[in-house]
Image (tube, rainbow, N blue to C red; front, side):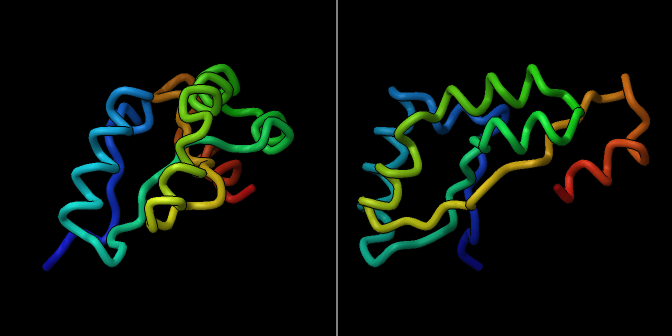
Length: 102
């Protein structure tokens, strides 16, 4: 089965040098579009409202500036927002989870 989405961890696929290579490779492999590309950016208002891992989320929102537009121009879909940042133990996961739904 072909990949249905691509999400580099920790979101390095959106960095300027890597995003160009990724989009060029995927454009060659999937000329008619292909997998969803995960964009870790989100609106600052949404990040602040969640109150979980704000610093990490704000940093991740800055790294992919321009990624969504370039991916879509190359014919690939991206997610509309990203709310899955965790403190990895600072806050219990059960307490974090409701914030992921904002």
